[in-house]
Length: 358
Image 1 (cartoon, one colour):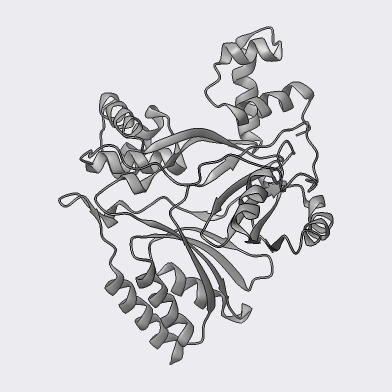
Image 2 (cartoon, rainbow, N blue to C red; image 1 turned 90 degrees about the vertical axis):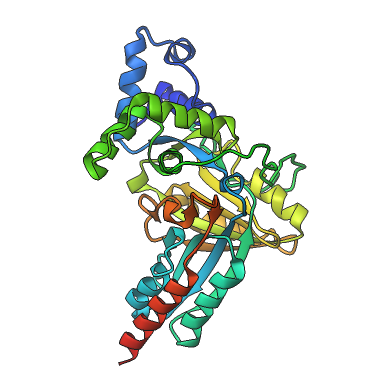
C-alpha cells in the first residue's frame, strides 16, 4: 500500500494523539465527509500500520509489593535453539521474547518481584551449559514514540545529546485500591489487546465463556484509570507495514545522563517507531523502520563512541515478537500481593535439563 500525503498526515496525527476525534481529524485533513476518516483508519489498520490503542500499565501501583522489569540478553549455541527456548519459557513470568536474526540470542523481558530469584533460575540453565546471559533490572517506565511520516528514514545523530526533560520513574502510588479478578483481566486487555468494551465482551464470551456486562467493564476501566494504573493511552503506529519492516534493539551504555539524552532524542521527527526504557546502567531502544536503514545507521552509531557505546541486535521478526501480558495468577487477591512460583519454575527447569541430558 503506497501512502498519499493525507494518509501520512493521518497516521502522524494518530501517533501523536490517539484521542483526536474523527471530526477534528476530518477538519485537519480537509476530508469532505467524516466517514472518510473511519474508512481510512480501517484500511490503514488492515494494511498493518495501526495497532491499538493500548495503555501503559503501571503494575508498581498494583498490590502491596513492587515488581521489576528484568531485561535479559540470553545467548546460546544456534544448534540448541529449541532447548534454550523451552527452558526460558518454562520461567512463566516472561512478557516479551525477541529472537535475533542470527538465531543465537533471545532478548527477553521478564516481570518479577524478586530479581535475585529469577537470576538463580537462569544460572541453573547456564551451569547446565545451555545459555549464557546478562541481566538488567528496572522499575522505570517504557515510552513509545510513533513515526513522523514526513521525517527522514535514516535517523541523524547530530542532536542525540541535546538536553531533555523526562521523568523516567513511575509516580509513587497514591491510592490503596482493592483489585478484583475482573480488574486484573481488564488491565491485561488494555495493555496488549484492546480498549474496546464490545471487543472485550466478545473475547470473554467466545474464549472463556464469561458474560460480563458493559457496565462492569466500563466501571473497571474507570477504576484502573483513576488509580493511575493505566496511563499514556496510545496507538502503535508502524512506519511501514509491520510485515515489511526491519526491527532492531539498541543496547546503549555510557554516562547515565548521556544515555537518557540518546534514548529520548534518537529518531525524533523521523519515520521510525521506537519504544525505550532505562535501567540503572543501560538504555534499551526497540526500533521499527525500513530495511534500508540497517548498514548506514550502524556505521553512524559507531561514531558516537566514546560518549556512548551502542550495540545492535537485529531481530528475526519485527511484526510478531512473542508477547503476552502479565499473568494474573501471580497476583494473590486475598493478600493483594505479587507471588511468583519460583520453586515450581526451578523443578520444571531441572526436569527439562534431565530429559535433555539423557
